[in-house]
Length: 385
Image 1 (spheres, rainbow, N blue to C red):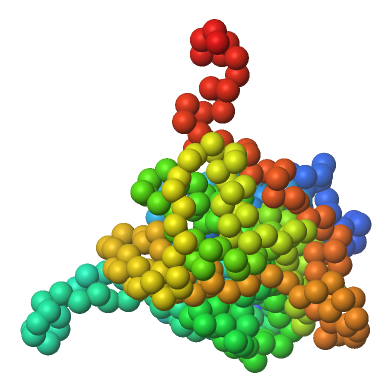
Image 2: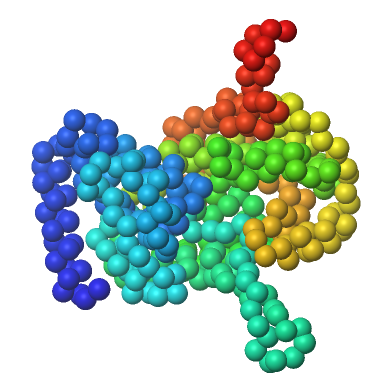
């Protein structure tokens, strides 16, 4: 985008913002038919968390630009969240800096949701002509998705003088992690902060919700595999957080970007569980009766190394095993209470976001795994009992 065009867009946006401010902030009848006066650009908006962020932004009339790498079918589910003309889909390439600048355009706030839970690969011919004739070629690695792309977004935000950047990382991003995925998330945080020190970093725990890869994973494995593996008897802890709570937190940051600039926010649920407890919770809902096998960590890693060679999305990888063998939880309550100053790590409570219990929503999307559906337990629904 040329400097002249960008300046013109920013002047027009400034006039709009002044008008909205002069007449008292948000205009319109309220909800999605209002105009909040804010413009937001979202990268990674077509993923799991992205659709719920779209809902939160659309419900108060926030004009939103979505970076789009695919066809119209990949983002059409986001459109109903917005009133007519309040969302725009801009095609970009993650390795094309200029196209990424087009997504940001005149946005006041940028949200980075880009991430991948496994490294996508494709079979290609061996360029050397030697054995083996076919090799796996990585499309986007963890390094590119979690470090290089966020760094580029952060640099563009600094150059284009964006009011704030919201970067979504992970609660598993720790120095001592053995997971490449978690380590790349930590490197991504550092890269973003270096390029744009005012960024707000969200670190969610494992997400649960209708499209999650946690509860659904256990339910699918229980119904399709001869046994459900438990890494070291499922002793590792996790503290899953509802995706709607994280999306609500992002909306509140968008509404007051100056208040949260440079802050880190840990997003986690109200309870911690072991993986075995999560599994038992799932099958209590689904009424499945799978065989459970305790698998040592080393054997499970070997199994993951084989399964991840599948040409389609693997149900398990070696790195998944490393991640699920570690505790995926927040710090102690005392840790958050005793911090002071601008370096204090915030939580959902600091944003007045109430944590949604996992028991409140899990049945709504897990009952479909029951044999015959949940109506089969109703006396007289299918036949007289």
